[in-house]
Image (cartoon, rainbow, N blue to C red; front, side, top):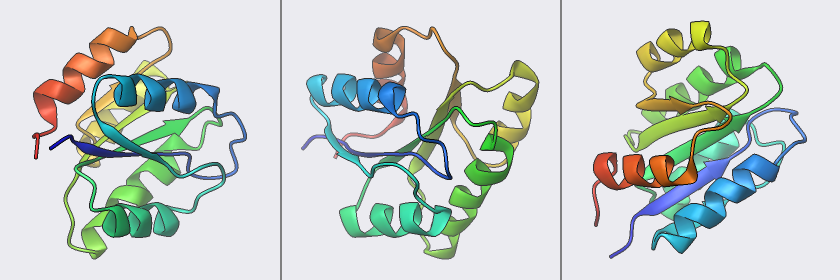
Length: 129
Protein backbone atom coordinates (compact mmCIF):
# COMPACT_ATOMS: atom_id res chain seq x y z
CA UNK A 1 0.00 0.00 0.00
CA UNK A 2 1.22 3.53 -0.66
CA UNK A 3 2.38 5.82 2.12
CA UNK A 4 -0.24 8.31 3.33
CA UNK A 5 1.22 11.80 3.68
CA UNK A 6 -0.45 14.95 4.94
CA UNK A 7 0.89 18.24 3.58
CA UNK A 8 -0.25 21.20 5.67
CA UNK A 9 0.18 24.96 5.97
CA UNK A 10 0.01 26.07 9.62
CA UNK A 11 -0.83 29.62 10.56
CA UNK A 12 -1.73 32.65 8.50
CA UNK A 13 0.80 32.10 5.72
CA UNK A 14 -1.08 32.52 2.45
CA UNK A 15 1.56 31.17 0.10
CA UNK A 16 0.99 27.55 -0.86
CA UNK A 17 2.61 27.07 -4.24
CA UNK A 18 5.56 25.19 -2.72
CA UNK A 19 3.28 22.95 -0.64
CA UNK A 20 1.25 22.11 -3.75
CA UNK A 21 4.40 21.34 -5.75
CA UNK A 22 5.62 18.99 -3.00
CA UNK A 23 2.18 17.38 -2.70
CA UNK A 24 2.02 16.72 -6.43
CA UNK A 25 5.58 15.37 -6.59
CA UNK A 26 4.94 12.99 -3.71
CA UNK A 27 1.66 11.89 -5.30
CA UNK A 28 3.33 11.34 -8.66
CA UNK A 29 5.93 9.20 -6.85
CA UNK A 30 3.16 6.81 -5.78
CA UNK A 31 2.12 8.16 -2.39
CA UNK A 32 -1.38 9.04 -1.22
CA UNK A 33 -1.25 12.75 -0.41
CA UNK A 34 -3.77 14.80 1.51
CA UNK A 35 -3.36 18.57 1.25
CA UNK A 36 -5.18 20.33 4.08
CA UNK A 37 -5.19 23.80 2.53
CA UNK A 38 -4.23 27.19 3.92
CA UNK A 39 -4.63 28.68 7.39
CA UNK A 40 -4.67 25.50 9.47
CA UNK A 41 -4.19 25.54 13.23
CA UNK A 42 -1.84 23.00 14.80
CA UNK A 43 -4.92 21.34 16.30
CA UNK A 44 -6.62 21.07 12.90
CA UNK A 45 -3.50 19.58 11.35
CA UNK A 46 -3.19 16.98 14.11
CA UNK A 47 -6.89 16.08 13.84
CA UNK A 48 -6.54 15.65 10.08
CA UNK A 49 -3.51 13.42 10.66
CA UNK A 50 -5.60 11.23 12.98
CA UNK A 51 -8.64 11.13 10.71
CA UNK A 52 -6.59 10.34 7.61
CA UNK A 53 -4.37 7.79 9.41
CA UNK A 54 -1.21 9.26 7.89
CA UNK A 55 2.32 7.90 7.97
CA UNK A 56 3.92 11.33 7.62
CA UNK A 57 3.12 15.02 8.03
CA UNK A 58 4.90 17.62 5.92
CA UNK A 59 4.59 21.25 7.00
CA UNK A 60 5.31 24.32 4.90
CA UNK A 61 6.05 27.80 6.15
CA UNK A 62 7.06 30.97 4.37
CA UNK A 63 5.83 33.39 7.03
CA UNK A 64 8.63 33.13 9.58
CA UNK A 65 6.36 31.50 12.19
CA UNK A 66 7.97 28.06 11.88
CA UNK A 67 9.71 28.20 15.29
CA UNK A 68 6.35 28.65 16.98
CA UNK A 69 3.91 26.71 14.79
CA UNK A 70 5.98 23.68 13.73
CA UNK A 71 6.71 22.51 17.32
CA UNK A 72 3.05 23.07 18.27
CA UNK A 73 1.99 20.65 15.53
CA UNK A 74 4.34 18.00 16.96
CA UNK A 75 2.89 18.63 20.44
CA UNK A 76 -0.65 18.21 19.12
CA UNK A 77 0.28 14.96 17.36
CA UNK A 78 1.77 13.63 20.62
CA UNK A 79 -1.36 14.65 22.57
CA UNK A 80 -3.32 12.40 20.21
CA UNK A 81 -0.89 9.50 20.69
CA UNK A 82 0.21 9.36 17.08
CA UNK A 83 3.75 9.46 15.86
CA UNK A 84 3.96 10.04 12.11
CA UNK A 85 7.27 11.06 10.56
CA UNK A 86 7.21 14.87 10.56
CA UNK A 87 9.17 16.98 8.09
CA UNK A 88 9.05 20.61 7.11
CA UNK A 89 10.13 23.07 4.52
CA UNK A 90 10.02 26.62 3.38
CA UNK A 91 11.98 29.77 4.02
CA UNK A 92 13.70 28.59 7.18
CA UNK A 93 17.10 29.96 8.20
CA UNK A 94 19.84 27.35 8.67
CA UNK A 95 20.24 28.59 12.26
CA UNK A 96 16.63 27.54 13.07
CA UNK A 97 16.96 23.97 11.77
CA UNK A 98 18.67 22.40 14.84
CA UNK A 99 15.85 23.61 17.12
CA UNK A 100 13.21 22.17 14.80
CA UNK A 101 15.02 18.83 14.66
CA UNK A 102 15.18 18.86 18.47
CA UNK A 103 11.42 19.57 18.55
CA UNK A 104 10.71 16.34 16.69
CA UNK A 105 11.21 17.04 13.01
CA UNK A 106 12.96 14.35 11.01
CA UNK A 107 14.08 16.78 8.28
CA UNK A 108 13.80 20.37 7.11
CA UNK A 109 14.01 21.21 3.41
CA UNK A 110 14.94 24.72 2.35
CA UNK A 111 14.23 26.50 -0.94
CA UNK A 112 16.00 24.97 -3.89
CA UNK A 113 16.01 21.41 -2.56
CA UNK A 114 15.49 19.19 -5.62
CA UNK A 115 12.16 17.36 -5.66
CA UNK A 116 13.97 14.09 -6.34
CA UNK A 117 15.93 14.56 -3.12
CA UNK A 118 12.73 15.08 -1.09
CA UNK A 119 11.05 12.06 -2.69
CA UNK A 120 14.12 9.89 -2.02
CA UNK A 121 14.19 11.08 1.59
CA UNK A 122 10.51 10.20 2.05
CA UNK A 123 11.04 6.77 0.52
CA UNK A 124 14.02 6.15 2.84
CA UNK A 125 12.48 7.57 6.04
CA UNK A 126 8.72 6.99 5.91
CA UNK A 127 7.89 3.30 6.25
CA UNK A 128 5.72 1.87 3.49
CA UNK A 129 2.46 0.30 4.58
